[in-house]
Image (cartoon, rainbow, N blue to C red; front, side, top):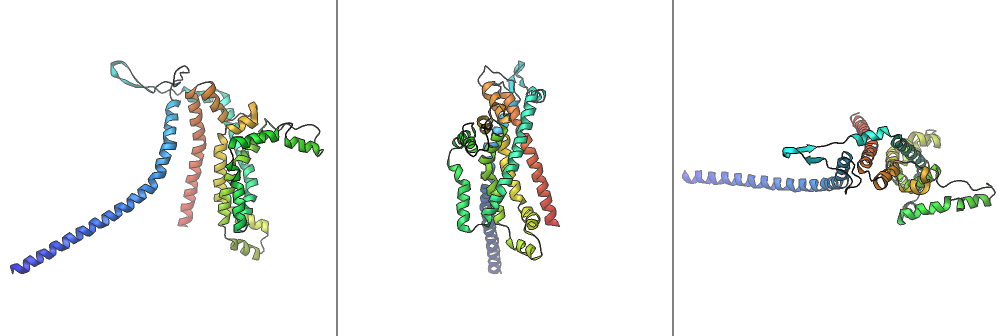
Length: 329
């Protein structure tokens, strides 16, 4: 009786230890899988935290301080020690109020939005046929065409903009060609105009419009167009009813990639637009380096960031809600 009971107890303890060992093995496997997921998700979050959140917090902090042009750095502190070792927090909201009181900032914001929107529209009109041609080309020709789109990035951005100065000036190649053809009698004023800024922005950011559009159009199922043709749909009707709606994700991505950097562009308006091109990037440069008013410049940058980020976040929220409704439907 005692031998049988001891044998049963040993078997029971063996089953318990075996179950615990298997459970520990499963937990270790889950921890390794979670560690991999955390690592995969943590690297982009760390990147965003270091290169977006930290500069954002620094700008927000400087925008709420008092300007001190003669000091280094040229702004005061948010926290200071008062009497009886009291820690005082001083927030200067006058930097943001100045943006509404001075019409220069509002004009710069509106002009930046106008130039960025028109440049984005031109880039879409020019880039969509290019992306469509790349998507319809053979695989070998497609690689060559994509290489030609990316080729300008192999040279310096400044060199490419300076090349446009040589093309657009009064004695530049464009005016000389037009005079040689007899189309004009006097040189056209192309440089230091909004037209030059549009040309520079579209030329510089056109690949950012073409590449996402081409990637989206290459995934388009051509059988849909063949079915539309069999049903009597004309090519132009098939484009507007099938191709363009299905390519909207690429259109939106390309427009955002062009519009967002174009709003805060500084180099192109400064070199091609001259002193008449009033954009928020030039205002930021002036406040930071000429006026040495870092708090006002930081508030301008914060307002521009909010002006761009909030509509993008709202649009993304609407798109996610629409995708959820379509998935449920």
